[in-house]
Length: 543
Image 1 (cartoon, helix red, strand yellow):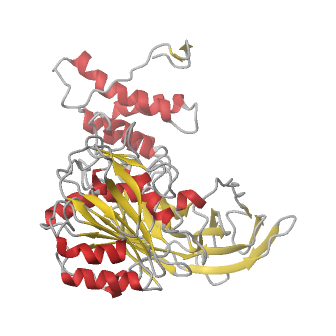
Image 2: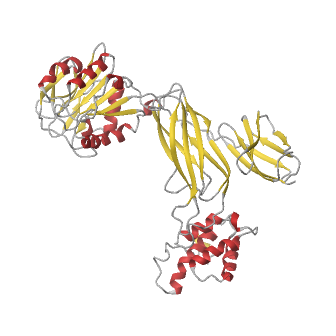
Image 3: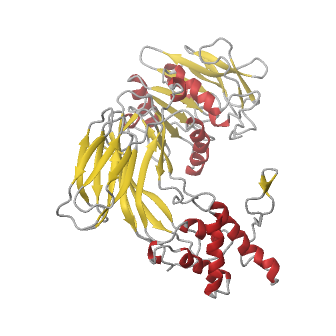
């Protein structure tokens, strides 16, 4: 089989293949044996400690004497042969490796159980609509130890023991209060609950923070990677869809979402055709982006009144769309609050170029067809500046104005005669993300990619735990070597805390003597937690 014989960096001979039982069987013993032989090969390649292929060969050899005459029965008997303590209920060495090696080839009871983690709730000490600076955020998880696709649902998988589940992030704008949950034992099919808490720093730029749920190696469900993204910070922009029917709003919203998600954290949503966005709703946001999609003359009198109140109070507005504000009745309002009015309602062009040297328009070139844009611009409007400043023009005869920026003593605003959702990206066009970034910067709103600097993350040193004697009968000395302040907790098999102590680090080891005079014999778990790292150890009390 090529055991320990290598040539050219690989095995002299191996039995690897992707054959699956019963799909790839043809009824010929020699050919069909390749399926289970591939499982054998994977076991001997992955056995731990590394290099114990002889152990793997021995297990497979003696399993032949069980009398099993089918692939599935042989796989099951392998676990009994590999058992090393006369108690199959607690598994055997390399249990997961054996199970998964067979399962990849359609043999046996199926893959080893996974942890399936689902978020039950996310709450904060604020109003829970947004997770803002200085708030404490709590995330509740339900974690199931199971395998919903097991071929033998009643197979007695052993419990997962000494399970330490950690909630981690590389984000430097939060401080954890609870970042780990420890479970001495989780039975197959059982569900446990974990809570993680962190505080958001007081001075941050709104952004998306990425977190990851870390479970013991080999246990995380492969199609659920345990990663979540949470927006942190103060609200920055309210995205308002004013394009009936609702399906159109949903369609165009999904051009904006991937764009702002690249650099912007907290964004609100509102559909103007469902309910009028009020000043009270809008005032939490420094900028409102109001897009009209393919709607014609879609601004109602109530919309205009609420937007006016918002801008009079200092709010910034980006008004974008091809036909949404063409009605001549809007002209005086547009001139007062946007410094422009609609001039022509149907220009034929696909290219918009930014005015060189302008504080907003420089390099703000847009193509309105193709690429990743919405391809919905059939009749863009040209604009006539009154008191505003043009920053984009159409690439057509006379270069009519495509967009105007406006500033007065109370507010800043932008009006575009086309829909930003059509921004195509590519060689001749910036992307929609870059367009939004430019606009927000002009309004004085920082974006996370702009202020974030590369950080060097030093890997914390893991505390070392040494317990002696182990097993013990009266007292055990627990020696902790840590460069940080730590907390020591001892759990029983039921997850109950039986002892807890805080200790300051010192130059050498910190020693504790634990005398569990009233506790019964059994297994106990030591958990040492610093700010960044958690270590565990198992001890045995024998009376």
